[in-house]
Length: 115
Length: 112
Image (cartoon, rainbow over all chains, first blue to last red; front, side, top):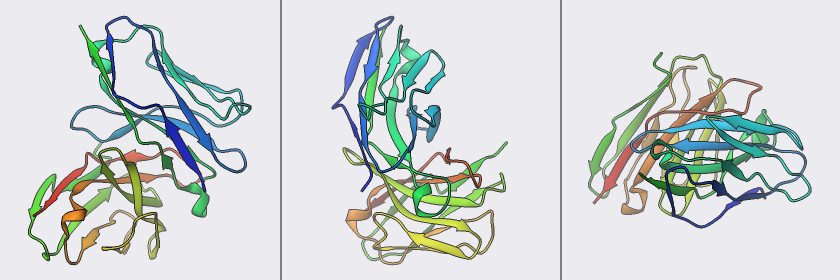
């Protein structure tokens, strides 16, 4: 079945440091890939997405590139801020209808950014 | 702009009690779903619905019931709560033909 694997956490960085959070997936066909972010005390919200190979999703300074050859969708940001402290989830969906439309999530990773 | 609204935000139950977590969305989304979030487990799908009158099981459906009588509402029922159901529950919805989910703020349930 479909699965998403994220690197183990938590991750603690100093402000303005470079961030990489690894995500790899297993799925048949050509899934869409997502990064969701959960700020303390809130629900998840979509951070960025990519729907086909070599697409780059970007938002709020974060980027991730859909790499079909390595089945990866690593999240990067050049300079993190304290306000980026949150839990980050990688997810995939194999379609938009029926059983394939379900989102499969990774376990999430907690990012803490120190001033 | 209410989006997805969940109630209650916090609930404490004793083993064997029943309760319903409410979820409502005002975006006319056909698809609605319930997830539970546990430490080290990420989010796991409990039940989902692709439209009024249609529901299906997700990854961890045991101990939970759902119904979908209207497009707006998708309640999650625990008929006999167990300590293993202590978790944070999220309701989420999306438009037909799109994969992006919109989440509620969550309901934290503790079963003693």
